[in-house]
Every structure is written in C-alpha cells, then in structure tokens.
Length: 85
Ligand SMILES: [Zn+2]
Ligand SMILES: [Zn+2]
Image 1: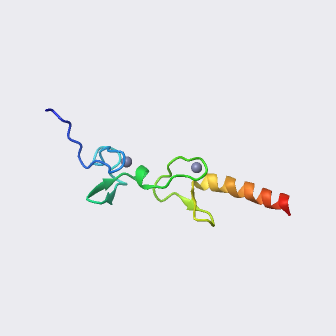
Image 2: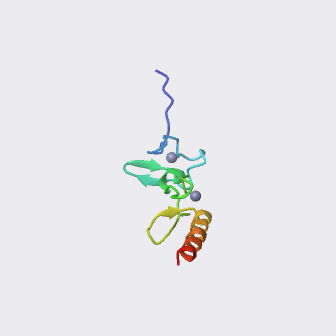
Image 3: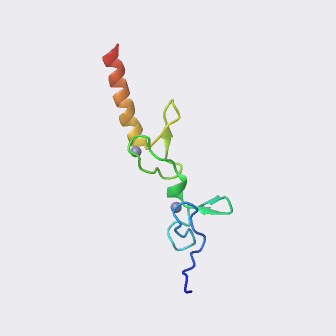
C-alpha cells in the first residue's frame, strides 16, 4: 500500500517533471498533465534517436532530424544527385 507517488509524471515516460527532478524547466503541458522535453521532441529520421525539444530541423519533406544528422543527409543527397546527372 506504500505506492510511491510520482509528482507531475511525464505523460510519455512516466518520470516526474516536478521541480527538482531535472525535467522541470523544460516540461510542457500535455493533455491534463505534463510531458518532459525529451519525450515532446521528435524522433530523428536519420539516427532514430529522440531530438531534444525545439532542436529539430526539417528537410524539404518535413522529416525531422538532428541538425548534425540533416547536414549529413544533405551531404549524401548532393552527392547522389551529382552522381545521377
Ligand atoms: Zn518523458
Ligand atoms: Zn539524429
């Protein structure tokens, strides 16, 4: 019966977003609760890892990438386009 109470849990990962848990500063409202910044960000289309909130960049197809992953992708694309001309 001694259930640990999680204060303001993230709607996605269930970790507390309350003050003192490291996720407080960047938490955002989600439905009736909260979501932490890690979970609220997008998944990188290149490496598949979560992108921290507001740090995603999009290519012309509106796919989400880490800035460094997108520059790599673009580098490949340029390369391929040159190859096929
Ligand atoms: Zn979370
Ligand atoms: Zn990435």
